[in-house]
Length: 178
Image (cartoon, rainbow, N blue to C red; front, side, top):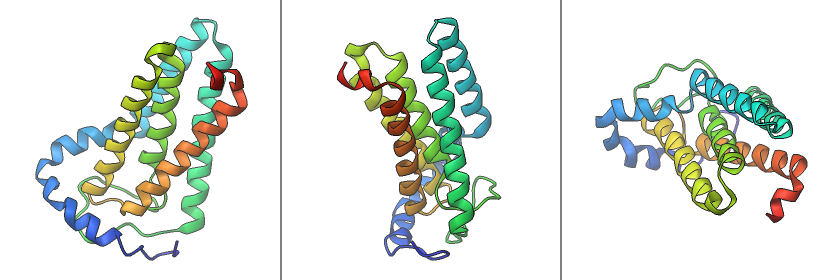
């Protein structure tokens, strides 16, 4: 990935999605599901519920995975120092670097772990699918709102998935065989 450049597919994807900007209110609501205030509130509520349910290990895993993902994402933003896209007006105020998308990373880690931890085993595939769709929609919203390149969102999804899988494999190996 170039430090300030963009892969060749980024511009055409942004152009193809530009028509969805007519529904900015909807996409701002979707992007809010990955915003810091909402994500942290949901994280703390879920961790608190897990603690009250005598699932301390799961609560710690959720907090550690989310904290680790935030650290990895912040470090990568500083490493790549990639500028935000300037092809369209930004419909959501932003001030940090572009790569990788924090909203995509945060949503992927948090929603997938919540699905794995909170859904009954028989409903887990459906819950994970719904969580993946939600994280996908949050990432898509960042492109439509003009604040991320598509490759930023793909990178964010990869960071989030990597942190979620690492936490799950490290803290809950027996769950992989449930």
